[in-house]
Length: 188
Ligand SMILES: O=P(O)(O)OC[C@H]1O[C@H](OP(=O)(O)OP(=O)(O)O)[C@H](O)[C@@H]1O
Ligand SMILES: Nc1ncnc2[nH]cnc12
Image (cartoon, rainbow, N blue to C red; front, side):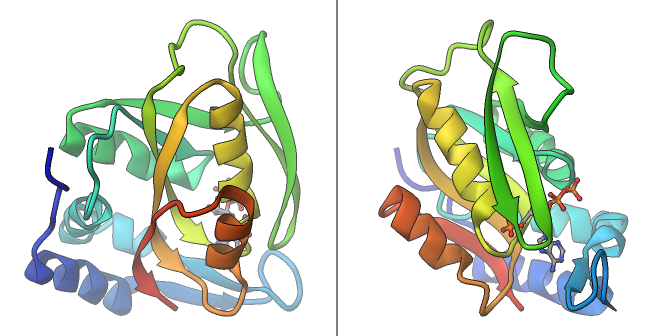
């Protein structure tokens, strides 16, 4: 099956929506963090549509989309619908009923736990695309991938709206997971 390619025009529309509407908030949630707020981009109908389409760029033979708690949920279902597959919520700790598979990890401004169900979803051998809004240090992405792999899935790529330059997210993914494609709609 060929990759799900998106036209240059569609990618440009998504990038323009981000440039027009993304907010930068200094010192949130902690001093020294430059927070990228994509809420206004996703609240705009054309922005949401352009971004969901752009996130599917280059995807090939995806069986399942995984959206990471919480902002990745906004995107995961929509991207799954576009690719005509199902969606799995990778949840923060304590939200899912047992049994779960869990992993603790670090992100740009703290530590957290991610969980997926250990039962009821066949993940063995399934090709999973992980979707989120922002790639910063890459801690969240690597943790989500490790969980999915522990359950037997194959993580075939990451798709994010915005990759933050200088935080090493792409390099952390490469170091932790090898040659897994990372598609970011825009680099900031
Ligand atoms: O690359 P990293 O340094 O790991 O950071 C990226 C993660 O940080 C944010 O989520 P956050 O944990 O703040 O949760 P939220 O979606 O509930 O706001 C963002 O949505 C990514 O999931
Ligand atoms: N600087 C940042 N802005 C928005 N989301 C983030 N997640 C991790 N770092 C972030």
